[in-house]
Length: 463
Ligand code: PLA
Image (cartoon, rainbow, N blue to C red; front, side):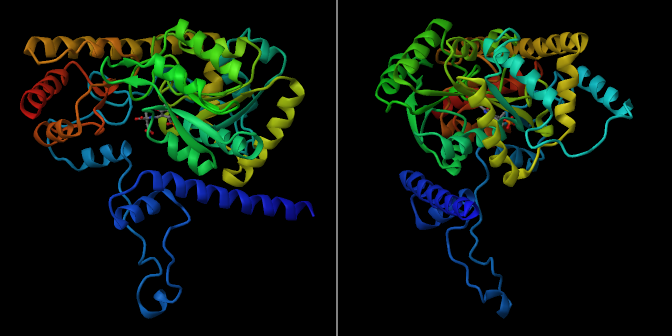
């Protein structure tokens, strides 16, 4: 009986996902049947077009109907970059930190923690529990909410280790689709390109709120407040904890406080995406302030954390989902349901990356070393902003480029249009996303002049 219910719920939820996805896709009104089919093929794992069951029999493929999907708008930039033989090429697409020499960086503190793990014979490779490494979960919650957080002291936080930030967002939204009364999530306009896909496929319906004002290249605070005021009460709201991607524009603390008051008065549920803690300002605590002012009022929220950028653990896929609940009792039940989301998805998370993070977070000296390395990365990114700004000024490039030094975090949202970006890629081998976003973390003092030349040419020849 119980199994049948679970099965029915599974079918209903699968149907819901498909119909939500259909609505989402039809809103994008692709220009032709082929591009629609390719969208479906890229975004709908169930496939959009019925295959012929006998095709394989006659020498054809049972997959002959499968349409070639387009590359991902962000990760596809790296694919194109890798194919370019030019010695001057620069990849400013994906947000991945590079050294002054243009090389990927493994933090010293991570190497040290890995050595400790390798040398410890008591470390084994058994499965972790469904919820992940217990120490990692506790320490991750402390890192984002603060070690003196009443929510942690009162055991009101359910934390599960997930597959980096993306996996944490996905598990959190699957949980909400099953157990929360309101299925609409409001995301900022614009936002990280993967957000709408993650939430739609989890079964939520996605709407946007105004966030960025292209005229000022700053926050459209009035528009944000208006849109959240007219959201239905109880709706979920996705908030970038800091270093908003792609705009590099964050609310001030005073604005966060106003957002908090509005959201709490309307019963809107905050879902924080914290992918850059420590990367915006160089301080782990300062970058967690937005989350902490919401948790301090005793209300509930969700937080997806990633260690990809701040610990440089990109490919280790380490992250955590925390759900702050109103009581310890609710948190226990929420955690039990998170396990039911995770078990059929990937069973349990990988052990190595989480062990590195736990080793660093629980050792005072290692933690301190990490904060210094993290600050050095954040400072290098900030210095690249100044260098690029100065280089454009020196060239007399038309326009006001002060947003390059005002924006925060890994990215600059340049304001360059699609054609200018295509020109820079073609003529200068500069790779970046077509919305004009550049990863400042991928620049070095050696590549800034080349980028400034490219921007100058794009602006003067392509406007
Ligand atoms: N949330 C935001 C706002 C992000 O920018 C990213 C990564 C993630 C979550 C997910 O990161 P994770 O799963 O690796 O922890 N955004 C990158 C990479 C850096 C990407 O698109 O996957 C970007 O270039 O935008």
